[in-house]
Structure formats: structure tokens, C-alpha cells
Length: 560
Image (cartoon, rainbow, N blue to C red; front, side, top):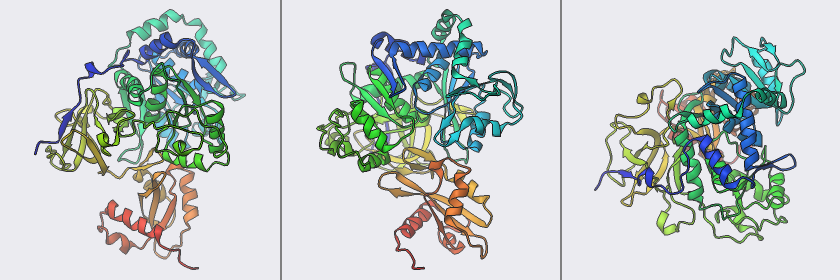
């Protein structure tokens, strides 16, 4: 049997690629689709491609006026709104690195992201659901000293120099309004930004995304312009969409997750379509948008589809415009929808490779993809290695999925790349899978214990660390239990100290104060220490504990 290593065609042969920098990408799509609608937040803002370029240039000029230099870090803490796009593209035009920050972040998480990300300018949305990020920032650093509105000096965040907010500023002037921030840039000539943008190279650092990893804190992942833009162009090709299609994409998933950045933003802009944004997912409101905005290309996670189908206005909505909705989603079963479209869901990827490494394009017949995660994409090599020895395994045998790719990250923050890849340049993903004789990759699970719930990654160690600080908790181990719509749900398995009586809801509330909502355990289960001993004594085996938790959840409730 042949060895489990497969290589895609050369990257140079990939069709549909344009300029491989973010400034180049935006310039190209603006030239192609200048007067088309690029992005809209219904009821608030709508920009053409030319206006998106102009607003991005405004941000770039303002950042330069703030003193941003080459590779300066700009934090972007916003929901999906047009200013998010202008902030990220504007940062690239100014020669900086966009640091995309999750709006689900708690104060403690935001503190970690700002420190490790070395953010020098923070562009943020003030009110997100019940969170006022102006208050959060003030609580994090009450000793912030301002020298002028928006300008600050902070010992806690020594790199952070400017704060600008969408949605209002504090009366004391600590935070600068969006309009005042943009006004800074009027003194900066547009020609300077053009020169900076033209000097950007594909190998330069473009973005810093954060992803949960095997440590308890999110890992910072640096990606080059080439890695990001290859995927932006590529996703349009993989979804089979182009300038002759009516692409109206609805999404309520955060662009601070690389998958949505590539799928929704990349596909839509590369194809000359329109992004129809929803800041915060609400299923009833979303159904209204799908109908009123005549959405053709919805991008949602499985748990969102389940909520959409359960919304009170779902059955009566006219969703006939959704021609690019996968036939396996509830949309295809809606009485007004007639489509046999299948998207490029047979794929495998990681944030470290800025999403997909293997994939089949949209409309691939079932007998071709055969339930796999796709073929290696151009420039990509996949090997399956023994997780202990690193030796390449035979085809058909399961082992660790390892990737070498032109979209591979530049590295984790603070970690040299040679400590992350092997001697042959492969990134070891921590995922389990195998290659068949046709070069198809089959993902079969994770060697690591990362929980994937509703499209987001949750580090069990991070949840365990929070639970460990609750009085009366002796042992806490968090696992992912399979779930029909979320993929997995977060379940905490807790051993109380001695005869201590713990309350599950109190523990969940405790974690909710410290971690983002999607990281809060859906269930807290209590065990005796002997239950853990049976699964491996001092070293608790997650797979056994996961089975134990799943079994407990299916058992009938004990009568009180």
C-alpha cells in the first residue's frame, strides 16, 4: 500500500486568483464592480464598492495620522457592520496588521487579547447586546490618562495609544468618536496611502486572528497577505459563484472567525456580490432579512439553521430567492425554495491555514466526494503521520493530519515557526484522519480535546481553569458531547470537595462572568472521584469521560 501523502496542483495553476495582498484585493474588486452594492446593514448603511474603498482609505489616513507604522497592530472589536470591513481593509492600506477581536470576549479575555496582541489602536463598537465596551475598557484600566480625546497612556497596555468608537464617545473624551477619528486623517494625503499600499508584499503580515488551542488561553495566529487573499479568491471559485451570478449574502457570524471571513466576505466580494449584514443573530429578524433583502447565498452554522427553521415567521416567509442554499439545509426544504445546489461543505481546514486545505467545489456529486473532506487544494500537501513517531502511515490508516500549504500561518505569537512545524515544514494539526487511494482526506476526529460548538472552538482547559476557582470544586474536567445541531456542546464534569454540595446553575453563572457565552457549559454534571479513577486515575482520559458524560445526559432524571 502506498504512503499517505497527497499533493494538490501547483498554486500557480489555480484559476481565479487576483492580487495577493489585501490592498490589491480591494483595489481589484473595486475596479471590477465599482458601482455595485458591496455591503449593507439594512436600515443603517449601504456602500458601493467604490464607497467601501473610500471609507477604507479614510480609516487608513486616520491611522497614519495616529502614527501607525509598518506592522502596527490595530484591534478591531466590532460586530458585522460596514465599519468592520473599512477598519480591516483600512489597516492593510496603512501598512498595519488587523487584530480581529471577538465581541463575545469578557473583560478578562479582552485584557489577554489586548496585551498579547500588542494593540496600538483599538477601533471598537460601543454597545454589543448587553455589553458596553467603553465601560469594560474603563474597568480594565481605570488609570488611563488621556492627553487629548482618544489619545491615552496606560501602564497596563503600554502599546495602546488610541481608542475610537462606533456608536458614541464618553463625555470625558477618553474615547474618540468615529467621526472625530476619521477627521484626523484629513491632513494625510491619499497619495501617501496609495504608495504604502503598493509597497505591501504577499509575504507581509496581514492579520492576527485568535483561536482556542491546547493551552487555556487563545492563541494568536499571524497570517500573511498571500494566505488570506488566496482564500478570499478561492472561496468564490469553490462555491461556484462569479460576477454573472446575483450574490446577495446574509451572515450573522462574526468576521473575527476566519471561516466566516473567507466564506462570506471572500466569496461575496470576489464575485461582485453584496454582503447583507446582521450585527447579532436573531432568528426572527434574520428570516425577515432573508425575505426582504432577497438573499440568494445564506451563510449560517447548523445551530443557526435550526433556530431559523423554528422561528415564528419561517413558514410564511417568501424565501424563493435562496438559489445558493445547500440542499441539505432547512432552507432547501422550505416550500418556497426550489434548489438542488450543494455548497463546498466537503472540506477540511484550520485557522492556522486560514481555513480550507482540502475541498471539493460546489455541486460535486455524492459519488465523487464519497463523504470525504475533499482533495488537497493547489499548493497544498497533506500527509498522515503517526502522532508519536511522526512516520508517514500507509493510505487508509488513521493518524495525525499534517499540512504544508501556501496559506499556512507565519506562526503563533511568541513562538518561532520552527517550533510549530516539523523538519519537512508540515504543520501537525492535532486532528485525526486518513487518505484514500484517490487522495481524498477523511477527517475522523481530534487528537486534541478542543470542543467545536456552533462553529466556534472552545478550549476545555480554559473552562477548567475558570471552574477551579469556584469554592468547593475539587476536580473539573470539561468535554464536548455530540449534539445534533451544534456539533458538540460544552459539558463540565465536576467532583466536589468532601461533602460540599454544589449547584449546577451557580457554577454556570460563575463561568458566565468570566468567559464568553459560547464557552459556558450547557450542563454541569457531578461525579465521585472514583468515576474519574475508572477512566485513567491521575490522567483522566477525555474520550472515556466524554462517553460517561454522554451516557449521564441520556439517563432518566432521578426522582426528587
